[in-house]
Length: 327
Image 1 (tube, one colour):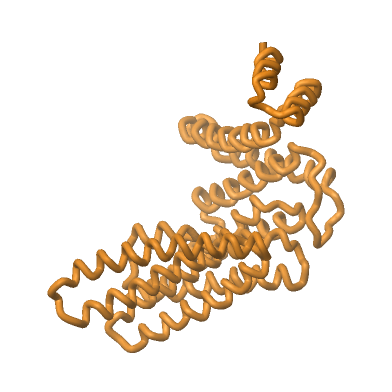
Image 2: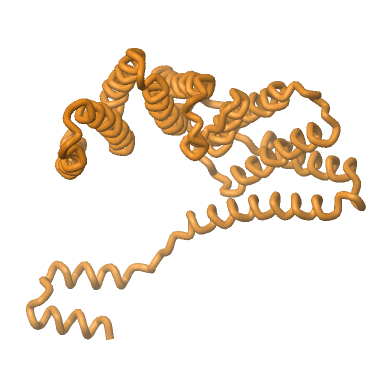
C-alpha cells in the first residue's frame, strides 16, 4: 500500500525521481531501531530501585534482621561490585575510555551507592566518626573522586562533586539556596563562592592539561551556576554598601572569562548561561537606578524595560547561535 502511495505521488508529479529512489532504497534496507538509551535508562532505574528497595526492606525489618547482618550484606554487595570493576576495568588513561560493556558503569554505580550507604549506616548506628561529621563526608568524597577517575565514570564524578559540597557544608543544588532564601548568611555565600571557583578552576585545568577532558562539562556546569548565584547573593547581601559594586564587578569579570571560553569551545549551553545570568545582573542594576528617580511611572518603565530587553535578549541569542554555527 505504501509503495502504491509513493508511486501515485510520483506519477502525479508530487515527488521527484530522486525522492522516490531514496524511499525505495530506504524500504529495501533492514529497519534498525536503537535501544541503547532505553537499556541504559532501565539499568539506571534498576540500580536506583534495587538500592531503594533494599533500604525500605531493611528499615521495615531492622529489628528482626540485625544491624550486623545488614552491614555485612551491604559490604558484600559493595565488595562484589568493585571486585568485578577492578577485574574488568581497562588500564587507566588520562583520556576518555571507550566503554565496551554496557553493564560495567552500572555495576560501579551500584558499588558506589552501596559504599555511601555502608558509611552512612556505620555513622548513624555506631557513630564510628563520633561528632566529626567532616571526616565522615571527607572519606566518601575522596573515594568517589578516585572511583570517578580510575573507572572514568562521569556519574560518580557528579556524586563526588555533590559530596564535596556536602563536605563544605552546603548543598550543591543552587535550588536549595534559593528555596531556603538564606542570603543573609555570609558564611554560606562565601562558601558557595569558593566552591564555585574551585569547580571552575578544575574545569579549566582539566582542559589545559588534557587530563580527563570530558569531565570539564560537569565541573563547569556546577561551577558556573554556583559562582553566579553566590555573586548575586553577595550583591544583595551588601546591597546598601559600596561593596555591592565589587560583587557586581565579579559578575562582569566572570562573564567575560566564561563567554570567551564558551565561544572558544563553541558551547551554546554555556553561552546561554553566561548571557542569562549577565542579563539578570544587568536588570538588577538598571531597576536599582530607575528606583532612584521619580516613583511616578516607575512600574510602567520597568514593564517597558522587560519587554524591550526580552526581545533584545532573544535576538542576541539568535545572533550568537548563528555566529557559533559559522565559526
